[in-house]
Image 1 (cartoon, rainbow, N blue to C red):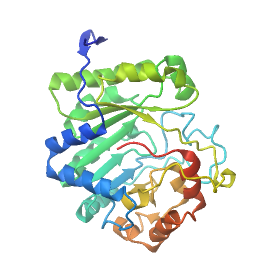
Image 2 (cartoon, rainbow, N blue to C red):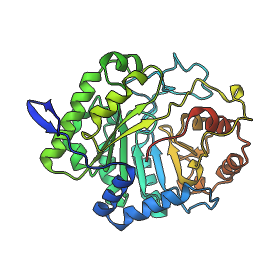
Image 3 (cartoon, rainbow, N blue to C red):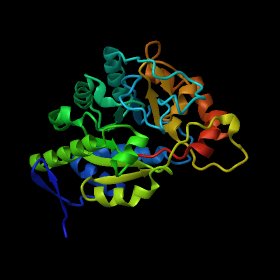
Length: 338
């Protein structure tokens, strides 16, 4: 039996569109065509232990600005909790828009297929976000996504649907206001209301996009609410993502490198991350900020992708000789998401 929630005085039906990520991919392949299917095949190929390097990264993660409007306990931006960082953070850099547009254009020509706007910070803060999403699709980008805390979703309801955004991922991590405040701070009821309004708007517009995901980072502080969270959002959104907690309070010198790896990282064969100051990283992990490859203000992204520096990172990762990568694969938890 369908359940219903009151949203702005109206009723919102629970309907299951997908049972898992594979069904999402099939849906988007049908909707977006062969280019999307090719993109997902290339992502799957580079996920395997094949050491061949594609001509360009499949995906880019772009940090729009080096600050956020929340200070979550699991995030290194909360420097009261994360006191042993080996890199600088919260320096309030904002990415150069013209340079970023050129990077996006050049990347598409080289073969980049997917962009995540926001990456290590809150994307909805940046005033040019939606222009960049529209620009990227106009140049040929196949997949776009934002990962947001949802606090500002109510400001951008039209842009969400008119920009061409493919994936809207909202991080919540709690089922009650009290737990949310312990993890993320104030705003639980606002975030839930904002997201339900977006879901309702998609229903009213009969819009195929964006795909809507909510995520939960598994921690001791919220484990008692996990099943209620899953039960509540299942059917309202397209998929619920339960993520492994990456403990950024750990540092490489405290990790037993004789322990088996939790996961095999393939990021340097798949993606690059661009920080708000222009620095380029080999992965989407905060620890990657200690492995700067170059800077887009000084080098092309293609030169960085084919550089000796990145080749060295790949070799050290494969041979388990990088302390940062070795520690990340043993204690930080596997990267999540599509």
